[in-house]
Length: 205
Image (cartoon, rainbow, N blue to C red; front, side):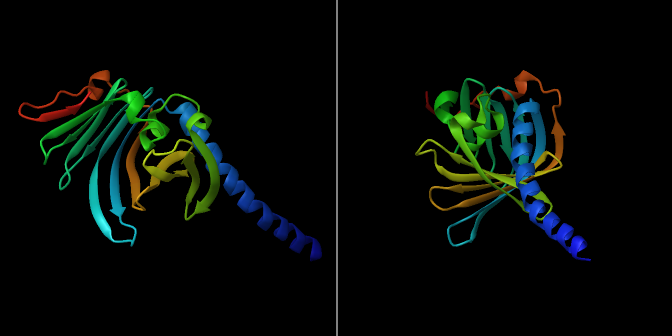
């Protein structure tokens, strides 16, 4: 009986360690094995007091290195598109496009974490892996200052990215959940090209 209790106690001590290893290894596997990704997403943004300030759905695609697009649907219709050299942010309501070089727009941003090509450790400090619900989570903290984000956490299930939790420098929290996830689908390069519509103001480089 004492041996059985000892075995159970040992398992209880090991389980948290196994969960910690899963979160970190899932992130590295995702980064090393995922060359393209397509998924639907649901995004909720709350302020520092926990009040919801935005809720939106859309579709995201990424193609390494540094190509991605996030199409936000109504009521906050936006497009964020990168062809690997430039990033365009198109706000439909404002009829305005902001364009920046990828090297300046990415850095230690969530987009860089998902679509970047350089080693994770170059831009992020990976820490605090944990398990919550049925997901293995791991946190990535930008090494650079003034990235706009304090912390980013990614949740995996059986090695597949399921969710992101972002905290920006203003204390706003963005929770993103993914569905209809496709790993390494064939994506055309033209999907990551952007041409500003006529009559839209273009700001930036």
